[in-house]
Length: 319
Image (cartoon, rainbow, N blue to C red; front, side, top):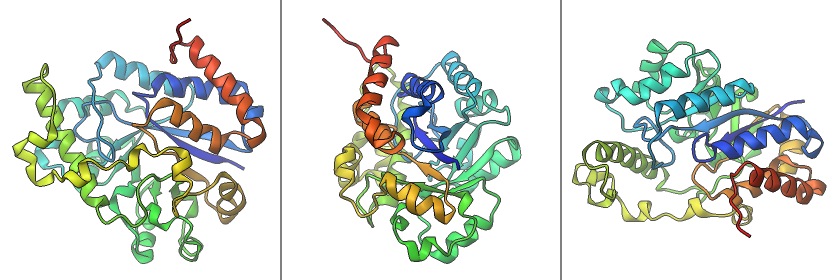
């Protein structure tokens, strides 16, 4: 039995995920049955194709090459979150995004898409990539979901409003292609979610343009007139993404580790996503401990992981 986890971020959490992957390889006794790292997903800032979470920063070509090689050498694919929903044709030829696609074009890595425009471009120009259909599409109707699962996607990430709706989950086809987001931080049935995705996409575009024109100045999306239609203070100031694992447990969309092994896996689901690209490291550690480590060994595993993170310089300590 394989229980495949897709883990957040190969840039901000690059070193952490490399250490954690080593822990899975060298100390498998700490992990729940069948745990496998199926991919690490994210983006190299300031890629304008990125969506789902806004990310600051600027990655060099050497760093891009290093990260791709490090994860691929361990057998772990990278999966690019190229889910910006407001892309236009002019954005398809972006040098930085195409550089990333070129460097990772080895038949191992994957892309998550939401824009039909970008999806068509990638299928035509980078046919070696496995394509994932994003949860950003907000497909909640059972018939539409079944249609999406019949399309040529490696994986379809389900809208997490469907989590725990077993009357729907039991009937959908190709459960092996479904990826379930287990620790969604957004409010269930949030009416602003699609607007939030568009705002993030616009912010990513505005940020990349800002770096080209004024890299030494602070970036403030609220003052970018070009994208003012996408700026909504209620969306921009949303604090849901800062929720801890303990707060997320209270949401109706939450899926417990026991649910994964006792309900979802027996139903035929095997792909599970942990979100957390932009959360603090210690919060992310708790998510990993909660979902992938045996409950009775969490404290010991956490200590082992933290000690290794200190040795590797991921966590800095002063005495």
